[in-house]
Image (cartoon, rainbow, N blue to C red; front, side, top):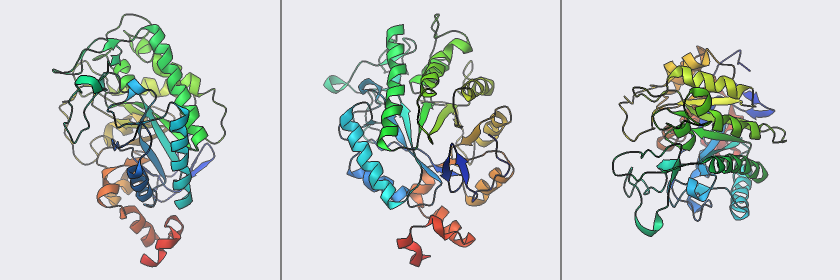
Length: 358
């Protein structure tokens, strides 16, 4: 479905779920979980974000298995204990503000077994706390990183099953949707990219084979019989590397996923190796995300320093994107969007307890 109008303050309905506007809170990893469960920090962090006026919130990357974590403090959702903790969190957030909440689900692959970023960025764990990582091929992430185990077909089937299981658990917790992580150097990106996938079997080689694991996950997700649920994906639009993924590869994948219940794709880029020649500037992914949008048939979002309000309004009204995902701006200035709603006279988006402040 393509939007006829692209205005920041207009609502959009995706699979029967109403988003009050076109701004999504981007998933931001907090590395603060306790045994994979949401901590007090998550309650504090997400309780603030749900009051910002955003049309939806995407909760941080959440591992589908223990070896699928980035660090020992990652959010996880693969057992009943974690499900109960997530359900409690969602119930708490929905009482504050009934905003659609989407869970990003992921597997770290070779990027896993890492130190928490503020302890040491892009550094593998060592000693008893570390674990053996898995990837599309036995190619280490970077110098100083361990060589991951090449996933065999049995392990691939298990990973596919874990993604589907976590999605089911998420819906049982009360999440309104899931966003499958196929970017930023995570496992599905590792299968997708020719940089990290040098297999010569059914899951590697040409583009069709490199995307097979992703399509099999979405084939399983498409069979989940849940009404009014959103199925999204964060997808790498390009690797910014010679012989890496290009826009046309992303277009191919999205068009395949469109047939398998995909509702939206948030286009990102880079991350298959820690250091990429990427110039971070305002909206640096918008133009190539717009090109991808012109060749696909699902809702397209993008992320990466998309601000201020006038710029967001401009790219939506010109039809460059259908939605935008904003992260850091909501941390540095939580009220930037709700203030704009006040100026537009749209008070319903603001919690009633705060109305006197506007």
